[in-house]
Image (tube, rainbow, N blue to C red; front, top):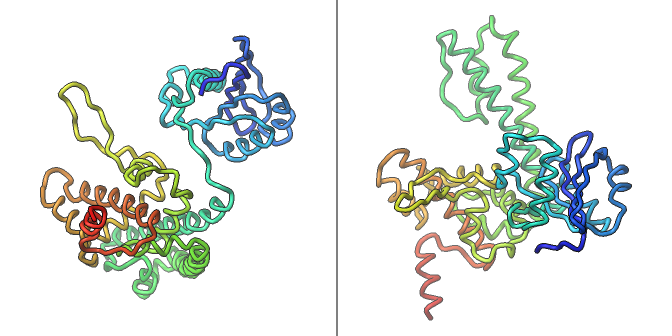
Length: 351
């Protein structure tokens, strides 16, 4: 809501210095700079209540909390949704601060404001994210070893990343041991650390009973369930479960104009880690080990329609439905029936 009775402050946060644009209640404007430290920001913002607009970023979490503690109204803008800032051809820190202040004064809805998750959820989410980083590092090492063997005309057999070191270590020729043995030793350490991460994730998940509810779905493991719950944090933030798909960037972009309504790629908004886990779960649902369910049948039928990237589009569509279904189960806490679930809900509603 627009409020012209207080100052509106646009603050472009930098690693060392933050640029500030202050729009006074009387219409005046002034620009200032302040160091991005807790002490300097506390000193500067120890002033009457203002509306402060910042962009989401590395410093926005702690700065936003600090400003709220100092009694200010804080809006955290999503730059991805504000093209006027992110795609400006005159982009400078001072210019960004000016735009943040102006948009905050006119209509905060134009900033697509976001809310940071709570500190406890953020700390718990750091565990699966650290595990994900280790998995990606392991993948790079495995690919390096495979590439080294392939360049010598000796491609390695197919196997999972978990069993790679155990199954291929004996194939290292003596000439390559100085180059590859340290990598295999690192892979051994990674496997041990990943097991420890998995145990930690199991312990963390027990503090969130809702994880058990949404992992009823075949293909949704504890890791995916925990990341989903921690990413959304509050199940009541969405009035409709269908909105979760858009929140996680699984909704197709729209560019409708007149009679033209082309089919576009998904928006990829929101948290990329949670979205990637949902797509992985969807791949499992549609894969050879996926159990029979309404979701699997629907996805397979969608893939049969053919067309360009039919299987990939079906996978993303299943991931979107999966996100909606998980939220629905989270809201109701009911038992999940793989077959006839939607029919049962319709009949129960009619009754």
